[in-house]
Length: 117
Image (cartoon, rainbow, N blue to C red; front, top):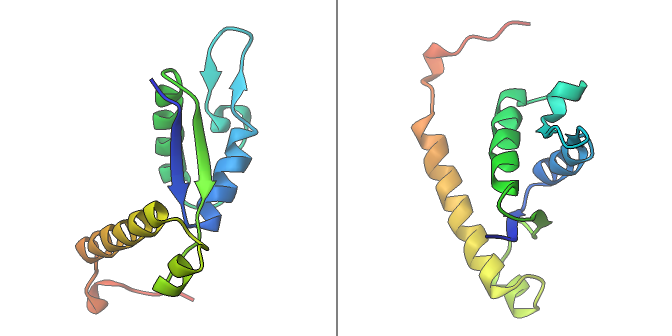
């Protein structure tokens, strides 16, 4: 199976992937370990990154995985000027819609959130 290509329009995800990938280590045939196992942790969203790396390492056993950065917040004009491919344009719009839906599922009422200074 594979190769796999993941697409993201988020520079944070792209940079985090590249930084973490540099820390994924093959221990001389003893298997691959998570970046956190060698002392590397992402500064924010560490729990999500840990889940990502577990899924990544499982999937990598079946083929090569790459991450590709695509342009964010694209317009029809970007598509017309070929700043983004039709496939990436449609995929990015679908991902944005899914993210909006996910955010709505996790909305908090204003009175349930407290702030400390």
